[in-house]
Image (cartoon, rainbow, N blue to C red; front, top):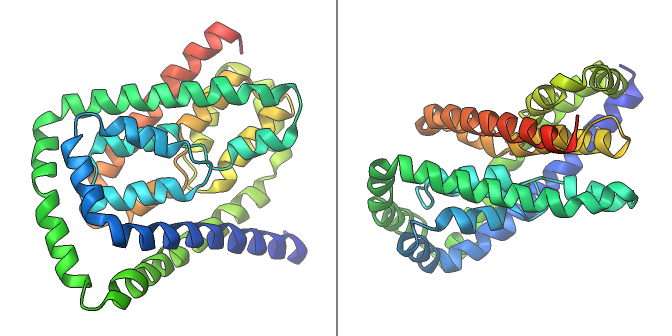
Length: 287
């Protein structure tokens, strides 16, 4: 790897991380003012919260999964809701498709529709299966919220500016390291090698696309989408890769000791769902 390539990877990692930082900081500033009504809203609609989660996941920004993971750690949302967000989010994939502006661009509509439906159905099903656990989690939301509010609302400045800034800065540091490491790995392996492999192994492409989608980095969704735009990946494989791709949200769950086991369950569910739906789509529209 040349120093020029490393410098480009470094700049890309910094740029992507700053975007996440701005998104997370802005969201948490808003949340600091509306935290109570938001938590009450989710509590009252606990049975349908995966629907709202899947809709939120459609926002074409890698910060959505980070925010969903953060809300799950705080017990503001259920496991089905965070899975719905992870399945429906696509990071910058939608923006890449729009930027290509060719016949592949029209595939945005079935892609968004399928991811939204998948997120809603799987999220509702997961919450239904773990209903007892879900109720226990929701019952603790108000207690967690009261403790959180009591601890951080010493002054309005601290509650609405300092705390969101500190929280976003911690996420920034973590995201930057992940982005840099993943960028170096992709840079060493080479995108052309990935493309050639996908072209010559179409029947396993959905599986490998979903494995690439597990990489906790915005670059993975961009890479998968670019392969599709260039004609090196089928729509079914694209669907599989983007279904499992939850950006940096999974890493936020994994870094918290309290949610490591559940994070592994979440990634397992998303991976299995991605492959089932991806291969079913391939059978319908072709490999």
